Length: 268
Image 1 (cartoon, one colour):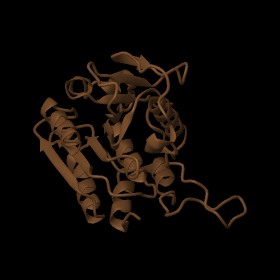
Image 2 (spheres, one colour):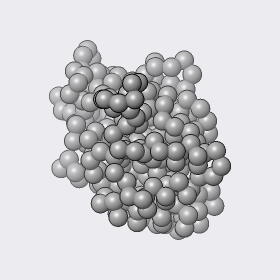
Image 3 (cartoon, helix red, strand yellow):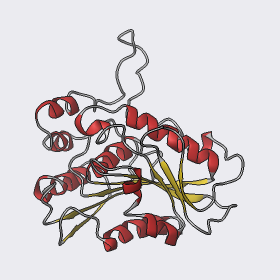
């Protein structure tokens, strides 16, 4: 259950209708009541339903390279398979989320070279709109697409259940924080490059969090975002690694490498 400080820190990054939508109580523990107004709670819309052990890989794994998953005619999700991936060994997976106005190809960009170097699978979905649903409204179609994309990946390749991370940049970083903390029983790590806030949702587990931000960021100013997000997460009991760097709204290669190295070491 988020503390009041964390909840207000998240809401403080929004204005107007977006603030009302994000702070209207969808962060309450246990989800919404069922249709009858009582009894069993409805599943929270931020919760992903698929897990690696619920799907068995079938058929031949895809060749190295980047492949569309065929889940949507427009703005499909992409799966990147690194070269030399052992066919008989479960691989780590990173769900990587693009920034506002981006697409699945852009979501791959910060981590693709490191994925090839370290043998990481990358799953890059695309938001249904210009940005992710919970950024300005509520959880919904983007969660559903990510759930379907994960199911597809789990059916194609063996995935290490102890090394499934979610990462993102800018709006994708905000979404990664909200989605990752809501699904801490699935995601082993949460990586947020220059986030703006944490979309409210009930939280599960305590995955470690990596946050980075440029001190000269003119898009999402660090003093109004990460410098509030990080202490609030620490107050809530999360292990947070925080890196500020000289620069603007970007992901420096050395910062991306540190985040990936932490994930790789966790499996060593």
